[in-house]
Amino acid sequence: MKKSALTVAVAVAFLSGCATVASPELVGCLQPNRRVMVEIGGIKVKPPPKPKPGAKPGKPGRQSVQLRALAQGDSAWDPGSAVLKNGGKAELDKLVKTLAQGAGRDKRPTAVGSVIITGHIDRLEAADGKESLAEDRAKAVKDYLVSQGVDSKLMFWESKGAKEPVPVTKFCEN
Image (cartoon, rainbow, N blue to C red; front, side):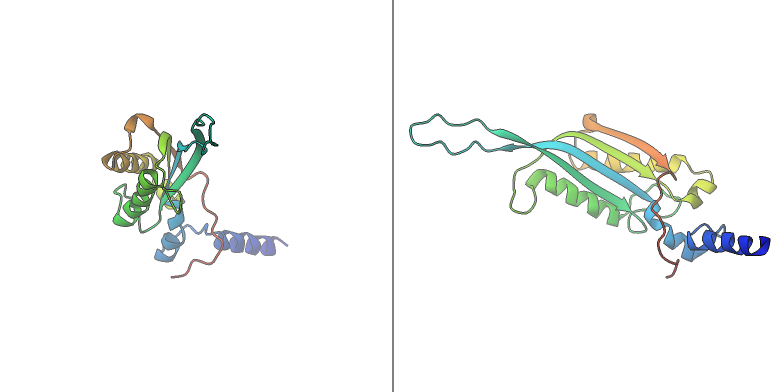
């Protein structure tokens, strides 16, 4: 009975990605946890409705907008590094373009109200004592967004560390 319980525990640890050996396969499998989430809240001004003949023109309305972007994995971050790579910058550039030019058929710009930036690390980085890396990554994203014209006074950043991991739902394979 004890032997089968141990076997089950080892299998569960392996399948959930909880192996303690930092193999390249495991690092690749955990890459979604090296991420920074950017959430932007803002408004778009709706044009006033077309007035009926002889009526006063209407007032413009407001539409609440919530935008999100994710700088994640090997394309955005090297393991143990807070330097934003080109893949992460490309994702953030899409967000900045959507703010300025709208998306799809809605070409209205978004007036930004707040920007929340949340940094995460994978558990291997957490095991190495690099908890501050999540905050450093969030600050790197903040600095990049400021360089792209987003107002820094509207930004807040936080570190979740290795909390809220992306679940590993497949075997770690190349």
